[in-house]
Image (cartoon, rainbow, N blue to C red; front, top):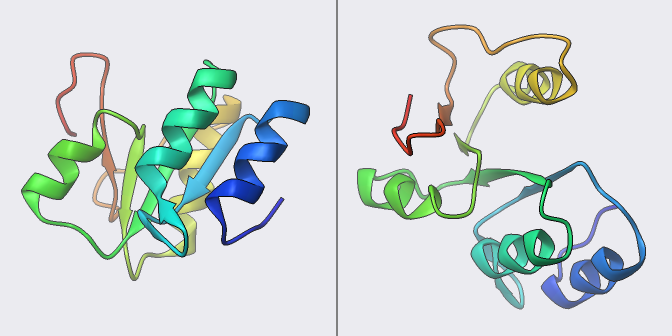
Length: 109
């Protein structure tokens, strides 16, 4: 599913199951934080990836509350594919790629 609007996506979470959400932080009618919060409220096991131009240490730290990964724009599509492979159990991210992950201890890696 693809949409640029928080409301349209939120309606879909009530009727469809998703494994992963990939979203920007700044959206037309809200924020990726609000979108992921709503999505995880309805689908707790959902994985979330932020794709954003916001990349300061503070931005990444705030993102830990919502997102499993933070990709900084522009990013290599291979990094996204690698993360999705990790979620599906068919691979792991490679060292040195432009991505930030948050482990179970909340530390960025």
